Length: 157
Image (tube, rainbow, N blue to C red):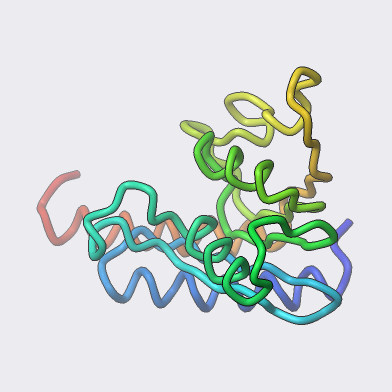
């Protein structure tokens, strides 16, 4: 069950997702929080950056690493509007993020239980706590509205 703090931070991630969408990027937003303070923010930018690794989670982790002066982030929580993919889940594990909170599930590439669950894989050496479904409907709506608008623009049904 989501607590008020989780909802508060997910609302901030949703604002970042909307910013990405307004720039033509798939609307996903993420932030890293430590002791109640946001230490890293990011939104999807692979198109603008010509960088396939520029997912929201990666951008937030990069910013948090700069804030901390360290690539390890124990005790931190990552909030993201969409279930992380394999690449982002791997980066989250390498950063030693303690907790991942996400909104909408991703049935095509989600690696926190939808397609696979990298955080439950016993052969891996780090296992973040994962909470799903925080503001899931709103997170999903931002994505579905974005893709519906894109289909209208391109004339694809």
